[in-house]
Structure formats: structure tokens, C-alpha cells
Amino acid sequence: MMMLIRRLTMALAAFSLLATPAHLWAARPDARVLADIEHIFAQWRTDAHVPGLVYGIVADGELVALKTMGVLEKASNRPVKEDSLFRIASMSKAFTALAILKLRDEGKLSLDALAETYVPEMRDWKYPTSDSRKIRVRDLLHHSAGLVTDDPWGDRQQPLSEAEFTRILKAGVPFSRAPGMAMEYANFGYATLGRIITNVSGTRYQDYIRETLLLPLGMSATGYDISQSPADRRALGYRWQDDQWVREPDMADGVFGAMGGIQTDAKDYARWIAFLLSAWPPRDDADPGPVARATVREIVEGSNFVHAIQRSSEVNPTPCRTARAYGMAWRVLDDCDLGLILTHGGGYPGYGSNVLLLPDKGVGIFVFTNRTYAGPSAPAMKAALALNATEAFPDRAVPVSRHVADGYAIAQSIWAAGDVLAVRNRLAMNFLMDRDAAHWKNDLTRLKEEVGRCATRGSVTAQSAMEGGFEWTCERGRIAGHFLLAPSNAPTLQALTLEIVRP
Image 1 (cartoon, rainbow, N blue to C red):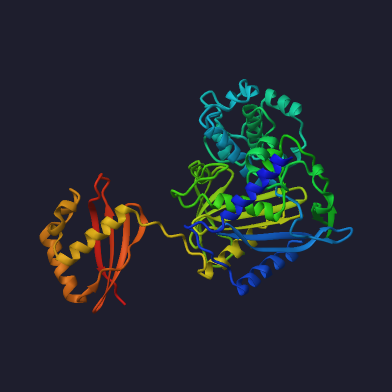
Image 2: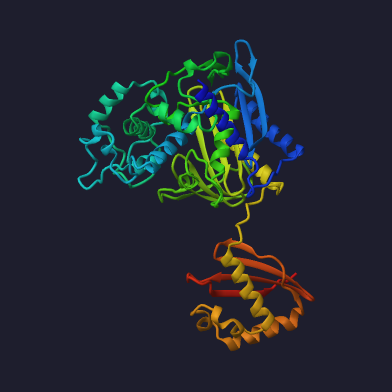
């Protein structure tokens, strides 16, 4: 018991440190924006006939907003509280996926190995065509194993026993298409990943995830077996039917919990979000785990089945064409307003949830509800857009590397001399082939005559560790510059642009 208490104490301390590393800042949404966001969720809850919900905003490792609404259960109208427990359905897949990656890091499995390597019952499966390749572990993570979409069938399989699942695996399942041909969401695939965790780790997937992820992060209220959680804290699940709420039956812990069985509270889940977001940006700080930052960042790596979607007008009337792919238990989007988004919903008998992460901004939003398939993605997205509009959470700046600093010094020297030949030994071999020295000298002379003297001691903004931009204020205008370094051991300049900024 003392060891467990010590472990939890260390985990809580580690979580609190996520709030103030040197590479982050302590931005806070102001009261007006928080009031707007509260209105967004309150209006949505009424329109969607949701008994109760809780939502939270995590920024730079801290839970900066937490709000509860409605009731845990209708009979007594007990209100939702900050420690109320909700099932988060398919948002559970993220824990399963990261557990698989952790086992990979430990050298216990390969993502490119055939799934049957770890689940022998799959060896006799009949594939849809004679030239079908077999399912890899990676295919299960990306929902590209050729298994049929199984919502809502899969949602009702959670109590399935290990013995019954073994029987199904031995019998084989019909395919929707050959593996590797498309992304098709399959809960069965994530149940199979749960079996892989169990077989490879030698312990039930529930116990492996609890011991290696949940407890190290201080998520002591989170688990799979709701019968073991405090009954007075549980949000009971309902569906909206015939203009009234109808109680959904509780589902026991079982095999399919790997795809949707987690129950958690807001503060525990905020720890999970803070941990995931702490993986961005890549850096040289200490990496306390429980999973390496580089491994966490793999969750955004998609299966290349990218497609475009139109952002819902319910979220924002301004048209926005967004690219989307499925990573590892996360939908990965490139949004025209928010940039990189990681998101996932959770639909389940009695529950509906959503999470949205903005890794480049260090911000996460989550919402739990106790209504079947409530689907609160729209208010979560609206809340993210409201935060973004304040400009309190800009994209984190790319650190200025030694190479970028050197590249900027080269650009400054060229401007001071008015001649690229002044730094000839710092030019990449292509530089003068693309534009000769005479033309560069003429261009520099013309620019200087037009803008006059410039203050060139300003800072540089890094686009990467090999690329940067800058802007100089001059007597009669401004100069905007951009440079790109060549992939040579000593930094050399492969491209440079200098332009007058017109009013």
C-alpha cells in the first residue's frame, strides 16, 4: 500500500510539473470567452436533450476551465459534479493504441508484424481475395484491416467474455474489403488490439493499461470495471426516446472494453490530455514518460487514406475545406483556422463524448455526456474557435536553432555588403547558378536605394531548424526576408528572398 501511495504521489507531482516547463507559457482564456463557451455548451445540451455533462479546457498542462451542467441521474436529479464518472466510449481507443506503442518500444511486438503472430486464432482466417495480404498490427491501429464498420453492433459487445471472443476469432469474420485498401472504422479491430496487449504483456489489457499508463499519470479514478467505482459518482446513461429519457442498461467490463470501456472523471482525463500535449514540440528536456514523447507524437501518423471534408456550417458559416486522416486512435485534421487538430468522439449506449487537441497551441478541450450517441463534437469545435479568436493561444514558436541563427547572420552580411560574394564560402553550390552575382548586386542596390538604411539587428523567426524569416524596419519602408539552408554539414545558403513590404 505504501508503494502505491508513493507511486501516486510521484505521479501527481509529475503532472503538476507539466504546467510550467520553460518551453510553455501560462496563457489563460479571459472571463468573457469562458462565458461564451459556457453558453455554447449550455445551448447545445438543451437542444440535444442531454441530461448532464462536464467539459474542461486544458492549456499548457493545466486544467484552466471546468464546468458541470445537468444531472447524473433523473430519478433524484443529483447534479453532475467535478468528480462525476462518465464512460467515454471510443475515446478509450487512445489508451489501447498507446499501450500497443509502449509494448513496441519495449521490444515486445512489431507494428509491421502480422496480427496472427500475437493472436494465433487468426492464422486460419479466410481473406476476401486470393491476393489479399494478411492483417498487420499497424492495420488494426489505423482501421485499415478490411474489417467492416461495426457501429452500433460493436458498442453492444463490451461484456463479451475472453472465451467467447476466442471462439469468434477461431471461426474468423467476413471482410468488407482486402486489408490495406481503405480506412473503415472497426471496433472489432481495437478489441483485437486488446487481445494482443493481453497476450504480449502476459496480463489483462485492463491491468496493463492501468499499471503502465493510468497510475503513473495519477489517474486513480479511471478504469474499465464500473462495478468497482463509487456508485454515487457514476453518471447513469440515458437515451432520448419518445420525448423522454429512457435508462440504458449498464454494460459490464469485458473484451470489447479495449475499444470503448473506460470510465473517468474530468480531472483524471485532464491529466491524460496534459500528458499527450506535453509531447509537443520536440525538445531536449527530460522525458519522464510513462511513454516517450516521440512515441506519443506517432499517434498523428496517418495511414495515408486522406480525404477532404467540409466543416459543418453548424460550427462556423465560413466555408472551410479540411483534410482528414486517421492516425492511431485519433482523427488528424488540418483545419484552415486551427491548424493541426487531433480529435475523437465517443458514442456508446448511454454516453456521448468528444475530445479535441491543438498540439501546436498546447490546448485541449473535452466534454462528457450521459446520453446515447450525443455527439458533442460541434460545441467542442465552437469552443476551440472561440479560444482561437482571442489570439491568447498562438502556435508555439519554433526554437531558433544554431543553423537558423547562422543563416540569419549570412543574410545580414549580404545586406551590409550589398554583394553576395562577400560571403561566397557560405553559399551553397546552387546559389549562384540559380541567380548570378551581378544580378544579386543590382537587386541589392535597387532595394537599398528605395528603402534607405535598415535596422538589421532584429530577431529571426524559425520555420524549422533549417529555415527562417525576418523583417527589417527601414527609413522608407520595410524589408521582408526568407532563407533556406542546404543539407550540408556546415550551414550554407541555398535560397534567399528579400522583398519590400508594400502598404
